[in-house]
Length: 292
Image (cartoon, rainbow, N blue to C red; front, side, top):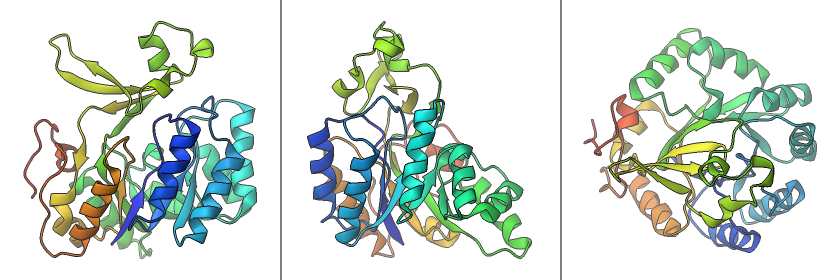
């Protein structure tokens, strides 16, 4: 079972981002996803920078995947995906169907990101014909839905693609053409001042009662609590999960990676670090549920 470092969902300063990934080069992660998946206005690193960083991490022995935007609206955003594909040295994580089409046209293998929302085996089959080689189920799909989909897919006589599940981090719940952060701060989207950079783990949103509820991250909404599927490792192995996705966070990421690295080498379920695993069971995620 491999560990993957998912794409950075937040907006960090350039030097902080580069320092994070250069430190990650020494972590026991096998796969690193790089690229801006949320907002093309976040230009601390451009496409050329992400590719250069990808080459640096690949030289350090990491498998690198370049991640596309989850919402492509402008020609400049389309051009950025085309430049990543034209490089040809790395798989693409396709987070919308624009990237799927471009990968298919160039004959490039791709990872289906969680925002593609593949809900049935027919959709998985069609995307496999287009070049899908790895699949990350969306957050609305738990253990039973994934198991049923894989069984139906295998019943058609197809070889299963690699399966990667979100095992750690705040869950990406929704995307919008509107910017939630700009709205919350009462500024125009086109004059936002890049305020996301002030919130390295997203802008906290509480209920009227003051209970932490969500995180606002540009056009994305995330859950407040950190999902942790570590205690589910025996079940994940039985399901055939090949990769555990760990989403970057502002602090303590090395410790999280080392925790999962030890866990994957043990037949026993590790202790829980995060708070929530409800999505994996199709149940509310508050509070964290026991495995099984």
